[in-house]
Length: 113
Length: 113
Image (tube, rainbow over all chains, first blue to last red; front, top):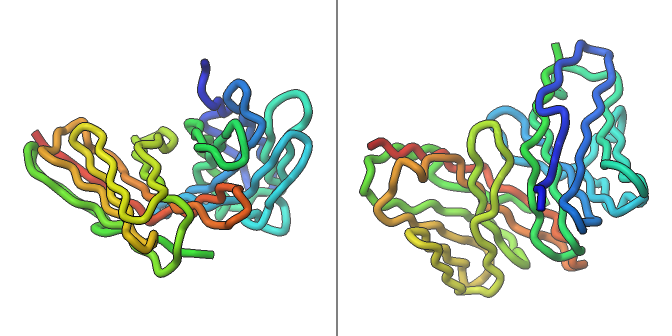
């Protein structure tokens, strides 16, 4: 059973470009979570999604950031018009149900030049 | 948002020594998890503690959840170089069943041969 997969593992963007980060949850998992880890800081919750629904986006910046988890395909975290402060490691986690353990992917490291 | 503080932030020890990492908060969590994160990878779950006063052992690692469910400790006996990594505690906040994890600041452990 493959673990949580994220791609790309590394992403370089120039200021003003768009970044798309993909997350494929573990097989059988319908709950996806996104976290951000800024340099020298802990992981911070961003958003929690179930298939086709955003359940909690209290940790998402109000502008430029959006997330989706379509019926088919991976979950996508989209950052529009990236700025240098968006440089961070973005981790996706998945769980089989609401209150069960979250399993983390290897992360996408975004660098904004 | 609840905060979790870990201490120490950095720990450098020799192989065979014992160590304890602390995770403290002023708030109560429904459960608390410990993760280890290797460079360039996502956090890997070590243990989940749920009941106040609970003690769990995983080989040379002993985890304890405080009676009031506000703090936790991780004790490693006879540390080995393979224990080197970033140790993160994470509390589950919210009482709706949704495991919104609040991560601690992390303890970076280096075990030298």
